[in-house]
Image 1: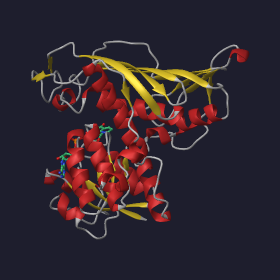
Image 2: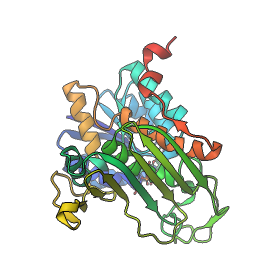
Image 3: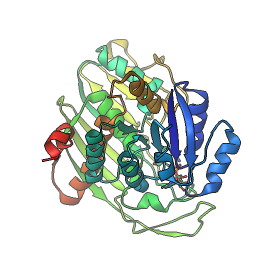
Image 4: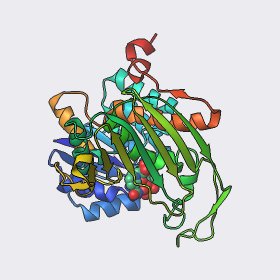
Length: 362
Ligand SMILES: NC(=O)c1ccc[n+]([C@@H]2O[C@H](COP(=O)([O-])OP(=O)(O)OC[C@H]3O[C@@H](n4cnc5c(N)ncnc54)[C@H](O)[C@@H]3O)[C@@H](O)[C@H]2O)c1
C-alpha cells in the first residue's frame, strides 16, 4: 500500500480522490494540501478518510509516512513542486507535462536519478482499454508494419468554457503542452521512440476574449503558439503528422490514425480511457469496430500512479509512466515548439545518457 500526499486540490483532484479511495486498492491518501486551504478542507469533508491537511507542501514532504507525492498543480507550477519534493527525498508522480521546458525536465530527472527516487506521471489514459486494445492489435500484426500516423487535436481553445482560461495562452501551455501530452504519449507508446521532428507554428490572434461566465469580457494576451503543425520521424522509420490547434472552429479529422502495411487503425481520443477502436483490413471489405480487449474503459485517472506504487512495492524501480516516457514526451513537445521557432529539424535527446548521474556529476 503506497501512501500518497496530494499537492493541489483543484479541478482534477476530484477524479484522483475518487479513484485513489475507491478504485485502486494499493493506494491510500496520506494527506492533502492546497494554497487555498478551503479546497483542502472541502476534500476532507467529502472524503473523511483523508487523515491530514498539510499546512504547506514542505510539511507534506517532511511527513515520513508519505511514499509518493502526487503533484496536481498547474503546468507552470509542476517544476517547482516536483523539484522541492525530490530534494526532500520523495518519489513524485506529476500531472502532465513533467515540466514546461526540456531543461527543467532534464534537471528533475537528473535529481531523481541522483537520489535514487522514482519520477513519472500523467497522462495515463493510454493505459485504458482503448489504447491498450490498439497496442494488442498492432503487436499481433493486424495492420502489419506501421508506416505512418496522423494526430489531430483540432479545437478553438478554452476561453468559451474554462473558468480560468488565461494560463492556457501563456508559455508552458498552448495546445502543444496542454493537450499535446495525450497525443504525443499515445504515439510514442504505439510507435516507439521519436528520432527527430520538424514543425511550423503560428499564433493567429494577439488576444482572446473570454466568454466563460467566470471571466466574461477578460482580454487575454496570447503569448504562445496556438497552431502547431509538424512531422515526427520515429526510430522505427515511421512518420507521423501532428497538428495541435487552438485555432480551429470545426474539423472532421479523427484524433489519431495509424496506417500499416496491411491495414489502418483508428485510435480513440487519447484524452479518454475507452474506445471506439476501428480497424480496416482490405480483405474484410469495410472498417469495423473492434471490441475492447483490456480493462479500464471508464475514467481511471490514477491508474499510472497505481502502476508506480506497484513498482515501488516490488522494488522494480521502473514503471510504465516513468520519466523515460514523460521525459521523452516533453522532449518531443518542446522540440515541436523549438523547431517552429527556429525553422530547424530537431533531434531528440538521449535522456538516459543526458541524465545519467555518473555522467552529469563530473
Ligand atoms: N482540470 C482538468 O480537467 C484536467 C484534466 C487533465 C489533467 N489536468 C492537469 O491537472 C493539473 C491541475 O489542473 P487543475 O485543472 O486541477 O488546476 P486547478 O488550478 O484547478 O488546481 C490546481 C491547484 O493547485 C494548487 N496549488 C498550486 N501550487 C501549490 C502549492 N505549491 N502547494 C499547494 N497547492 C498548490 C492551487 O491552489 C490549485 O487549487 C494540471 O497539470 C492540468 O494540466 C487537468
